[in-house]
Length: 503
Image (cartoon, rainbow, N blue to C red; front, side, top):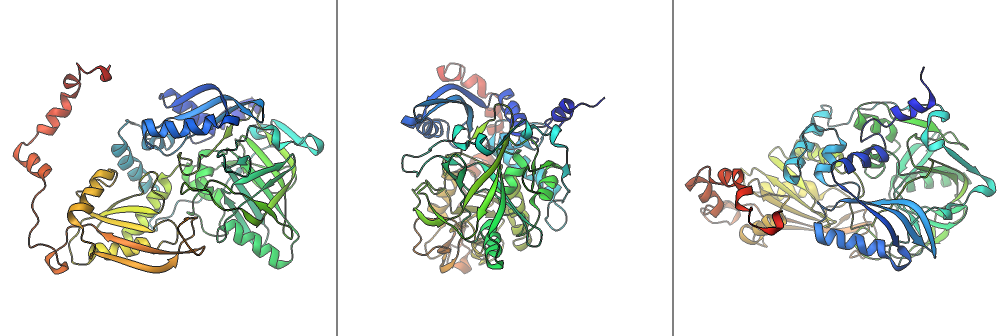
């Protein structure tokens, strides 16, 4: 006999099925740090997040969970979790790679190769329709709150930065749907404004903003909205990227990432469907003819964003949640907050069609707006041309650095050595003005930016480079002492046996 309990358990078999299943897998690998309590009235959690990244580095810092957090003088029960996604070994765990090591470079290559194999011939993820299940089987329906029982302020949302306007829900997937216009799932920050009210901030040009404004122009007075807090990792990946097109059903895309239908359940107050394993679900209405001040808020570029005088907000009509729900928090611009490998794989496939000699692309941690690409250069002008294709992306790519395929694009030092030794400032292209959507604080005009392509490949004589380039010292070592690096690797533990830090 299949019971509601056994159905619920079956929904969380794999790390990609829910936040809880993923965190359990992280903890089994020793990648979760548990802390009993922290005082966020003194911004202890925020300061800890900064120091964690300082000490471990952005790629190696572990996820962490805090059991209790002090907020507004009261100890709130958690856990509050952060820094769950983004390390390449953790991505390998999430996408079911059979062999996982702690080597970031090795896991980057393995994860991207695995995901490229899952794309179809056109570079698209398979679309798989979601599977609607009964509310009795959905963990996110364990507790249901309506009317005066609704109090969104009771949950341990953080005021992350001292300059923020208040506490924020910043790791939720916001669902908006319309019978004629289609649907959108996006990750938009939500300022907590009262027991039954939150702000919602789709930036101008984002799909949610476009959809809401189309509904306004049509004359609609309200829009139904559902916010799934801490949904399964694949849904959060879909809501945090632009891999699905405008009005496309992101839940079908999530099925493609999973390789199976996403279990969903219908909301209490409207027909929007949400992931069944979400930690908490907020339902409500967005007035389309009323606006409120929102922000300021610490943005992804590491700067305080401006106060916004007219922004959307939600009147909450229902809350459902798991028993003892978990809260996820983004330390925006500091921690890794979403699975990134599907977007990297999709981008690589797309650019590879335009740039056949492309061998890799990587956005360094903490360097919003900058991307490094590598290619096997064969022709004059090839580096600049490749960089211009990537710079044409209207999203993050303000600075595009192009390097040869012998440069480790994940090693900032190696990239900078290429810029220092192979680049002449004349081998650059500046685009004076073009579209860029992200909240770069250096821009004078929203939605617009200048861009630069830095061609740090070895310049050929036709490009003004030297007649010949000297071989690198490492190349000379590998050819002059063949096998020695491999021998060092094999004997590495013996070299470090007397070093205290190795014990």
